[in-house]
Image (cartoon, rainbow, N blue to C red; front, side, top):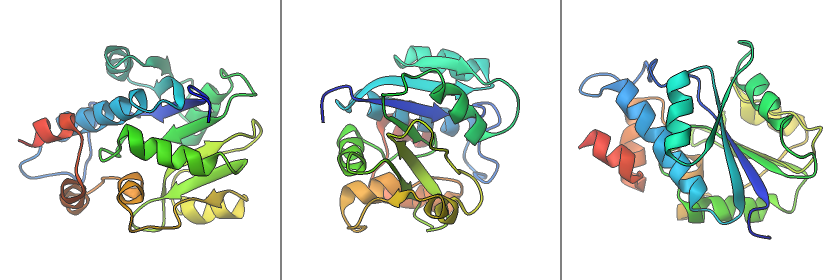
Length: 205
């Protein structure tokens, strides 16, 4: 793929709300910010990604985006993650493919994203399922009319919409990294086993 072909869209609802199911010794908002920093760092290290847009209703997340070299966009309305992605998708050249990446995937690296986008390049619309096998962590679209279906049962909804599921070798390191989102402390333990980014590692130290 040509360098800088894809635009990454990273929806982040709020940094301050944190992860309600990350409890105990963790300061959830701090960990949420660390996750986002590691996702944005992975985007910046992926040569196939030319632009990174963070869409959020939180001004603090806009400041974080700018601190990480991305662009922050305030979400219009409160319709949820798919509407947020569609809003930013409308600001991207229709001929430019986009990859939407959830902000709670701290195991991502630039090489992992390159692996995902190399696979996505063969399809008009594709996605990466999460580790649990019911949700999705990424959605890739070369078709400007395509719609994401993040949320409950998103794996089935993406499939039903015709998106191709990526990652045939689910045991390879890059696909383990691509699928690992974090909602609970068990998820976080597994993410640490796989290997989290430096911001998350510092937050957990």
